[in-house]
Length: 308
Image (tube, rainbow, N blue to C red; front, side):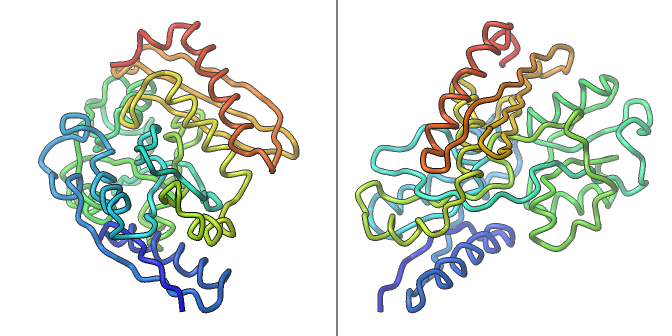
């Protein structure tokens, strides 16, 4: 029997994501074995500094990518919002699973809304994107870095270290703790990170067998949407820690992309919405061209001046 080695980080959410992909592979290919191989990344170890200061979210993927390249594992599962847009030489995202709810959740023990928080209240997030969009709505608030896994960040807010916090709703739903969120932030207020709530299966480019197995997991509308979002991010030259938000959606044969670039102080923003054709047999191509067009439009509107 063939067995695949699937690399994963050790947090409970990362384990859920790996189990989700492993179960889908076993269901698609009865008899295929999938062994989970755990990794602790530099991003998991360095918890005393904001992500942008220590190199951004790529620090959550480097160890897994190294293990793929040297053959210690056959595939790795990443949250696509954590994965840099440039593929390392020899690797690629071979499948994108169907996306969960991409919105952000609002954590606030008192139940206050974003508008209802007291003047000068603190909001915990290490995301420049989230912090900038919060300040866009409430410039009086204080954005403070918060690190740790999903449960740790919620606990830090609930214990009073922060007045509120923002986390991806999909993570809470996957851990079955969405009830601890006070509300879900509307897209007009908080547009998600490129790739948020979608999982990417990373493989070696030349591994035809693994490509064939994971092809059963690929969801064309999600792939087109996140490709557009990530192409927008790449077209702006922004890393996955930059204050850049984007959400692609597919409706029939049309792909819609909504984007937002916000200065880190929230004072200025550039928004672009754009549509293009969607073809399920060319999901990557559909998304890439649309994302690039949106980036060109945003840069023409002055988005480059808003990036740190």
